[in-house]
Image (tube, rainbow, N blue to C red; front, side, top):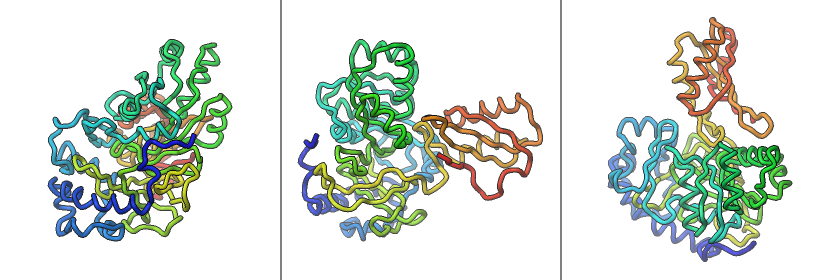
Length: 407
């Protein structure tokens, strides 16, 4: 599988760079029509920002800042000039962060990732990302339909209904988290259901460690990874070369030293910062908090864009659990709702091939009723279930760590 989505993917790398930075000044002008960008970029002449060095002098906007900014100036923190009614769909992610979907054919830029994973026009795809208030399901749905595929909007869970859909429509492909793909395959094997039509997958939203990759491959499914966010859509994706991920077109991706806006030396691990060239809803140096490193050389698949090693962890304590971000401020909110608690630490681990959360909470009072109340609050705040472990006052380390990712 060496064919490409279009000629943009194989163009000369210098030509791509020149085209991106020729477009950037107009994107900056559009961004500065919104009040928050006008304030952040005050004194910047967009006409002078035509290189990576010039872009690196602009301030970064940290994704971790967005919840407070959106709350102060709803819905989009003053970073979008267009009214909410001019967009196609309106979403929210934990924080909350509010995300609009552009009224475009491929608003989340995901068709390339699906094409690289082997999907083609006329394929039927089972999409198990959530079709609710967060955009995950719609990201893959819109991308698949832009590619010309038919989509089964299954969402996560309810495996019995999913088996009926699979046996009726015979989808060739799966989109969703890698964890749920294994759950689906295991449940089908136990129930004697036929899901053998699924032969390829594009997975995202959760860790896909080598052990799980081998397990999925042993089931006869060719699975590819993609990296994206609810703000930007698909940012990078795996190709047939199986060497890191290729950055999507129409994005400028930088890798900077965590906590700064300064680019790292090529090959060093740093934080991903993305600038999108969408004048209707531009992102200017959005720092995601995700770590990666650039790969040198040209991909064997023929694509010439920058390659990254994929997701290498978080530069802050925010982490992703079962495809959903969990933030330190959410754990603080749990503490605010239970005055009897002391220090809190959310430990994220793996059991088998599934993400597991355990909230360790200091408390002088230990009871099953209290544990249940805290667990209910944790679910209400994070939208995810987790265990609660009550510990003695003063037993948790006094090191400022709120979320410990032990995966």
